[in-house]
Image (cartoon, rainbow, N blue to C red):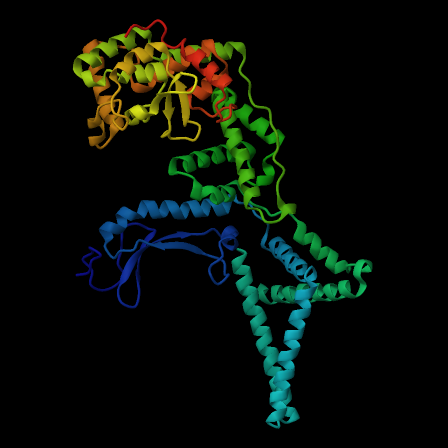
Length: 524
């Protein structure tokens, strides 16, 4: 019996899944996932030899059918994503791409006369040496003709081989019947470039490029057709899986509304139309998204243009970054947003009840609710706060120096208001010790550990409203909304904003004044 878990010793093995096939190699075999490629996009997926790909395939890496079936969904999803990208890319036709690449070859040759001269001298030396060798052995005229005929045939084969390799490298699939014409074009472009390079040396500033040369140069200058998905792949190494999936969702929405994934489709008009469609009610054919979310979608789509420009080697191919009008909140919208935030925020009464319940159940967590409510710390920030991070600055202001936030903007200084000072300062201990109990760090998941204790305290206090860790941070932000500018609020909460990371005395004074309004009615 084989490890394929099939009761077959002879004949073809069946997986029971249409796209999962058994493939035998020299020594054994393995299960392979396959996906047929539609004929109209086969030339967008060239194989390593430059031929159109008729079928995408990837080995599961096992001869066990049980393991192969488990790996099948993930591998098939990867193949389908490749197929989708090829379908959505909408690049130039193969002929257009070939013409542009011929233009690039021409420009690379015509604009480098020194390299052309060096290449011709090298070739001349090779031929001189070859004829000297033939003369040395007394070759007859017929033998010379035969030798030259062989050299010419070798050159043609080399040209065809190099042409096919070049086509594969630039992502163009070339059918056998088109290879000769493409190779002829490559030869003509290079020879035309060499001729113009020589004439530019002879004539200098008086040199006029040939009509064919100008035509090839125009082809080379045409912008590269690249899709939003291609640009996203350039950024892929810098993105986490969740962020990458969010980008894919935003690109799919763009495709649904605009109907084109080319970078050239991203303009001021299309971005304005896109975000307004996203924010339109579902009944009107829109997505019913909030204005902030719609704006974020538009900004993320536009950021793919910046990513492309960062990786673009040719200045003429860079894309101008368009401006667009972000959706603005009316005064009613702003008021409703504040009220919505307040609904998700823990009330002052809830904070006091939860604090008393926490202290009764877990006395060493006395600082937990105050840190969330009065300093606006995230659930991932408070457990790692050490006493060395709490100190007085030069002006005598007590601050929390948050250095371990999940984002660059989250690294911030938070002034401690008088109410929080009354709770924290009497608890001060060794600089390297944690403000919250050390045992938090002995568990596998700190957030779950804290969350379970908050839920138990909520049951004890019989609290019905929001009382999770983030609800206190919402309450912190809600208090700030009424008493400081948006920039100051963003800085205190660790959101991306306009204030620089350099803390001046004036800025610290503004931050300190703002936090004094936080939790002013709470009695811990």
